[in-house]
Length: 450
Image (cartoon, rainbow, N blue to C red; front, side):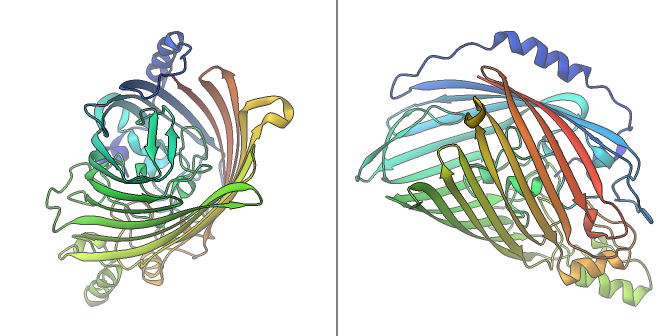
């Protein structure tokens, strides 16, 4: 997800504005006392700065949407306020103003699994303020045992019935509600790669920054949760303006979640199915038109009708001790239509582990290792082999191989509410092309929250 002007920005930039803002905010961090139960309101804040650099790598050729083979660096910065209030019993209203800036590697092209999950929020080296979220959550208790809800970002402290109905409606991200995972979901504090923050093949409805508008209904019954939601699509692929025609162009998803205990430790299994409906191009239509005209296939020439894209995902998280846990995901989409709102991955498997630093006396630190294997459909890879360009990838031709990603990070708790992370990513077959790479990237992340 990105703005078109990523490709228009010059390669040179300076991040001093973002660093200066972080420096101004750090002294304001205060020691929070435990909130009263329940909270009538809360206010949270986060700021995240990510610097990435990659070494030069071998490439037999490059195309218009290739990751540059030269050494390069990149940065992103986001700052978010999360304001919540309880207007009535069971109701919660949240507002998230957000500011962002940054410059991506190669105009945010050349990878299926992009290396910085924060980069989608940014629109160039000018700090931009916008509304990220404005939504209402309503909960109706239906009995059963009571469970505590901790004070958190977009979450008021209190207690709720384990059997309940919850409706969430407004402006938010689809993955605020769907495909959660304790160990791999938030690029501000966990893994950075897009393949690891959610299902790689989950082309969920979103604008260029990753947000949408819609409604989700959840039913909680002891250890089971069933979720369903509809959110609106962008007017055009990976653009900022959203299409208000919610009954014509939409993203639907249903997720079933079950909590369990294995070896005395908690875990969860989630099954997700989704269906997108929008004015999308077909890769095969583009190939057929090129065969008739003798030209290069282009998805922009065949975006003439409404199409549906379907897919599913499996999501597992499992604690193996109070200080360690593992996760795994597998996802698939039909791969017949162009990527509309996320990234160019048609099927993916991923997994990894996260360990707290308690064993070495650093309980607020964490160490994570993970892998992802991303792939394309037959039609999608044939389109690229014929010289076609996707929104994010296109080397002019392709020696197709699955894209393989390994990521490791160490998250060091510098002071209360502030972490510094070192992250390494090794990417083989970038953009599914064995004629290019491998790519090695180092990242430094500064994250503060209070």
